Image (tube, rainbow, N blue to C red; front, side, top):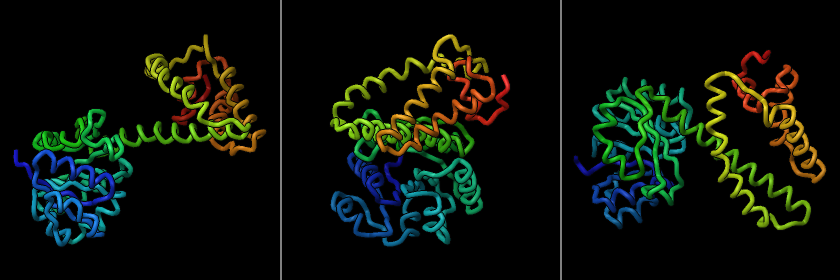
Length: 289
């Protein structure tokens, strides 16, 4: 295994990845549109490329840590990428990943799509993992290098799959952050320090996995027995959260969005089914039981 690569994009995530590779003894060529961001890494041993073209020319393996795929086009358009493996670790949609693979293939390069599932400070640490998709042989060729920044989880050959899993995880993560802020606002509106809520939220998030097995079983069967926690009961609770928010003067858009799922299921006659029947609402399927 050749221990060298190029990394383009030196925001917090890119800098963390370069740091990990330097610690692991790699020769890392770096480039960033704001050149000064490379100064600290160069002082640690990274090689500064003067242009993006020079950075790509330096190594077969090129990692991108950018805001989105548009940034990739802005940087690589007109650059000779023939024979290169581009590992794009930027965030975007699955469809845009597929388009990017075709764009690079037309120019003689191969794309491996990646999604890093930890913040910058945890890159390369025990909890770190990264979703990947793209040609299996290309992934396998570079898997040990990719392992340096986190556990490499290969999701399949179709380029959009890594972004699909990445965005699904962020769906949960971003919603959880938002609901944490919302719950804190409810508490603070009553004059209580939101810190008091913290341990209870931690317990709630810890117990969430107990619902997973039944949830995925119901989804797989397409059946949602509602002996416990049916939609009528849970929907009433969702409306109470909306009411509590409005009474507290807290923005109710987030709980109202959740309540609307229950409202639509109830309107379709699904009220006696488990809350997991909301899956059909979310999938925009016919709701008639």
